[in-house]
Length: 286
Length: 250
Image (cartoon, rainbow over the protein chains, first blue to last red):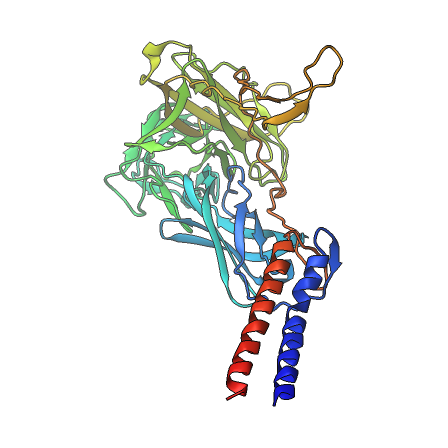
């Protein structure tokens, strides 16, 4: 019985010493570089977007689109390869309007950080303002999201107006006839992001090519409607006339147009001739 | 009197005799229906116009400015040539507005009106360019603002850790260890230059990652731990011995 006891005690001590052996081994490595193989099970770390490159003010293109590039950094402590680039997205947001990137591509990869370029298309009628929120997002392969919406972008003002033709023409007119409508209107299209509450038209007299007779500017009138015999606004020779009450481009959008219809009161006592404007009329918007 | 037929053609230099005209310009905030360009007194602020030309012909742009207070300080060209297919902000025309350093100008409003005119260049050899008198008109107010306040003093503390230095015997040194304590140094005020990366992001918070199987430097001292282990081992052994003796003899 005593021998068994001694054996048991001895074995216990030996087992105890072996149990602490690794710690003793570690102590030997104090202050040294000790090789060790480590098996780690690392949990997923959500990515972050620490930085969005501030861009300069955006100037839109008249009547068409504008593609801008927004660049941001995305970081994932699990390594950049854990970023799911297909989920990268940039949105430019102002009020209820959101312009979303069509494509995002990584242009530079570090160990855990990637620089990503996203292209966003803006329309010519998008509002000017210094408060377009830039919202950059991305997810990693575990679907953990990252977002940065700390930046704002500025969209500049865009004044742009097109017209389909640059003339009014009457194929024929009869002496002494009033309110003869021109064969064609002029259609103005607002191709920018500005509103024009004021429109001025400066009319000019027309002069016969052969006999040099004149039709005064005050015989010409304009309207926003076709087939008018009353209510038009009459021109004053070489003078700006405010036609805003019926003609303006006081809004902007995907398709904002305004037709200008012209009329002439053909006077009597002038020769049959071809009449041309003595100089160019002008339309000004403000 | 019989009927007489006329042909009348009225040519409009509508929007300056071109089928499309326009330009981008600096965004100015709208405050109660007034666009405002805020200019700190004693400073210059630039306003930009970006003419656009989507045609195949050269566009000529002229800017007429109505500026009763003569706030525009740079000389504009008679006109600007805009090459074909110029879009967006490829070309910019800078208008620099300035207010003198006079506190009475703070809050004052100065009306400015710009008429931006444009026409196509039709005769390459002509030295005279005739513009239609009007195109777009833009109006805004230059508002005097307080001068830009200088950047507050930057106090740079050079923190020097308390260092021990032993005097050598030369020069009659006492040979004792002395402690020299540096006082904080306040450097002169200097502006802070803030640079913004333009094309590529550079401030990556990159950190090194540790691949598996790497070499690890053990930074802790385990001498005390070894002693504790030995003591605990002995206590446990003695305890087991006592227990076994006590119950083994029963």
